[in-house]
Length: 301
Image (cartoon, rainbow, N blue to C red; front, side, top):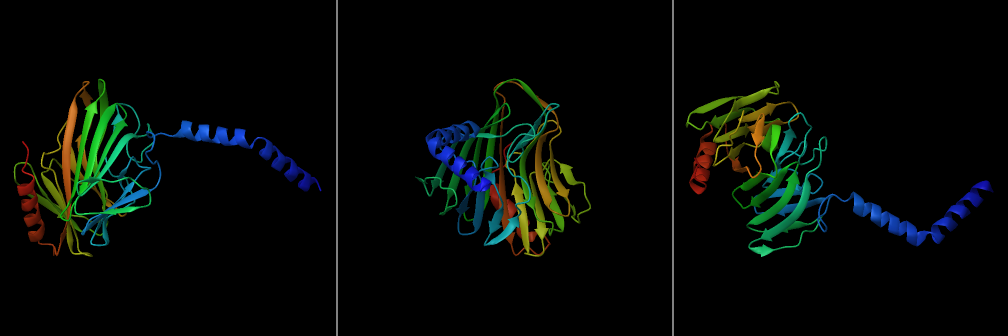
């Protein structure tokens, strides 16, 4: 009997205060919202061309969730993509990191084959050229980021502008979670020389030098995974690095390892990601693909 009475009382209170409770809930939801009005904060939007499929993760600052080529995943969803940074003596900001603070998304625009398209969580948009444009804030930096898919490659461009004088401990400008099934890497350095080495989950960072392009070979899919930067990403302590772990061979493009910025200072870099089919490990297909990308997007000095 006591239980029945209690339930009746609670039900009655809810009915009497229903309108007020609903209003309070809406107000709380609004106050907890981080992104600008109308921009989804959770869920995925999938971008798809003939060869590439890229889900975009709203919760991680509308950054890449993973990369697929012809229906097979060649870059995993077990880590973050996009841009992250650490303020001097601070904690991480950007994409899925929340230790220091969240990336705040202000505007999104989706263009499919030249036409503006509404952004719908849970949906898939298909076309020959798909462009997602984002404007956001990461710490004291204004961000303009673009992800563009076509049938040949994935184009990523991010511009950072300091909104006030500030200092960073580190900026990882681009990150990609390539699979642990890759067995070796090759890199072209800015002077045109080549270096290469194994990947075997030994830990630590491989390459650790500025690069023009870097590729990994995955024998399980017989593909080369190529990342080309038309303008070498450089700064104080900049490096190209592969974190050689058993869960992924994550590729980092580090812009700095401690740097000061004045208000208005800008960084503007691009990376092109391409899956190279029929690579057998001698790098011939991958080198040819890199040469083609360099013709499409000439190196910037």
